[in-house]
Image (tube, rainbow, N blue to C red):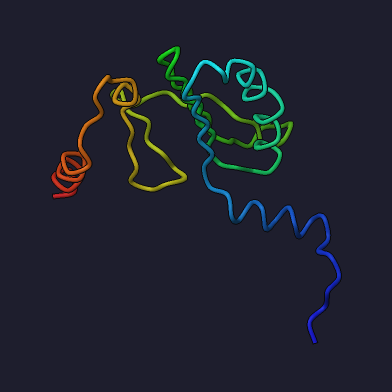
Length: 124
C-alpha cells in the first residue's frame, strides 16, 4: 500500500532540483516592465535557492540578454554572471547548446531549417 503522507520539505526540494535544469525568462512586451524587478529579485533568489543551474534573462525591449550560472561559494550556491564565449552562451545545463543572443533581437528570426543545418554542420 502506498503512503499518502505529504513528502518532506527536503525531499520535495530535492525533487525540484532534479526536475529543473534551466530557467529562461523572456519579456515579450513592455507590459512586463514591473516584472524586471521580480526577475532580478524574488525570482532570481528563489531559483538560486532551488538550485536551478542556469538562469537566463532575455529582454527584447532593451535588446539585452543576461545569463547566470550557479556556483558554489563560501556562502553556499550563488548565481554568477556567465561571460559569452566568442559571442555565444555555452550552456552547461543543456550540453552542446550554444546561443548567440543577438539572433533573438533580429527583426526576422532565422528559419528552423537554417538553424538545424548550421547545428548539423557544426557537429560534422
